Amino acid sequence: MSTATNYNLPALSNEGGLSAYLSQIKKFPMLAAEEEYMLAKNWRTTGNIKSAEKLVTSHLRLVAKIAMGYRGYGLPVNEMISEGNVGLMQAVKKFKPEKGFRLATYAMWWIKASIQEYIMRSWSLVKIGTTTAQKKLFFNLKKIKNQIAPKSEGDLKDEHVTEIANKLAVSKDEVVSMNRRLSGKELSLNSPIGEGGDEWQDWIEDKGLDHELKFAQREEMKQRKNLLTDSIKILNDREKEIIYARRLNDEPTTLENLSKKYKISRERVRQIENKAFEKLQKHMLNSAKSKNLLPAN
Image (cartoon, rainbow, N blue to C red; front, side, top):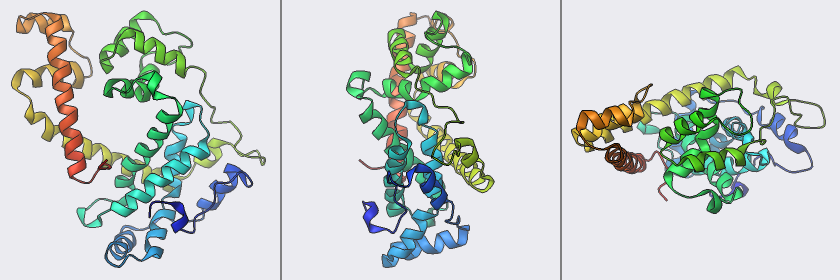
């Protein structure tokens, strides 16, 4: 089940173009919870390929929707969709319906992971950096920038660079460098996707899919919160307080204030924060894998 050749899926070829593919996958109906459960059980117990195929095709629109969220990285959308489809097929292979959540919720982790791996390969991440913090910067810079400086173009103001660097635990130079690499890669929602003149926003308007995506996102957020609540117990009291103050509050406490509270240097506070955050991330990742929420590799 590792390749698309196992299934009778619409082809993402150059002949018909992306718009033809999007039109084709809209014809596959979304599944009711009961039908999805029965198909998944049938696939797991009997290996019925038709059941698996129906699970895959009913979620192809979800993959395309998620892939379009990454179009700002300047890579071919059809390639990102293809990678996302691989993640979807892996999710179907691993999906256990008896755990109580829908396939869309579970598949989002796999789809995003596949697309992000493709983006990182394409962007030569060796040059960007491979630490957890640098990957987080790569995929979160645009979102944070839109929150604190929504209309900024070109280089960021120094105070914005400092704020982003503190939030993502990277250096200011890394923020400046990444911002310059990502600048100018945005694609408009009004960009044509085929010879027929269709636009992204025409295709995005799909109330049924939007509802399913929002539901999956809510479920994913609930899973993340549960992982955080469980994982934060491994930290000692001072680590917990610093993590909450620096990472989990809407308005982070300054290093200066925390250094006064604990009677230690600001650099020592930063060291404790970074070490505690690494411990927390590692525990959450291992927990997610043990609960079959993430790829095991």
